[in-house]
Length: 177
Image (cartoon, rainbow, N blue to C red):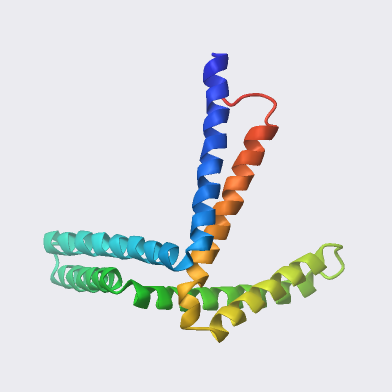
């Protein structure tokens, strides 16, 4: 039993190491990592489109059938377009990230002032300013930022997750079941 419990901790540690390696690779080759993310999204859209078309074909009502087919075809075509032109998909995904970071930054800044009497409100304010700056930085370099932004962000996320798992595995006093 102890061997099996120790083995679970080892798996957690190894998973962390693999994620760290993938994170480093993504940060060092952000265009490749970003393109891989976009291609995966493209395949997800393609599969979702095919499923929607099949559901539309099986639908009973005329409007339900038409809407299912139209939505499915549009979704499948979007997936095909992204798969066949990953750099275009990467540029679009980068624009979505800009919108997300700017909106998140503004939201955090506004909310931080609502918590101003609390001692931690400045941390939320700083986080909001950082998100806003990141969004504006990516926007100022768009469309070129599409070649690095998604890959770097995915890489940093993988690095952070990997480091967290390795740290967790090394600090657990009791092996996992």
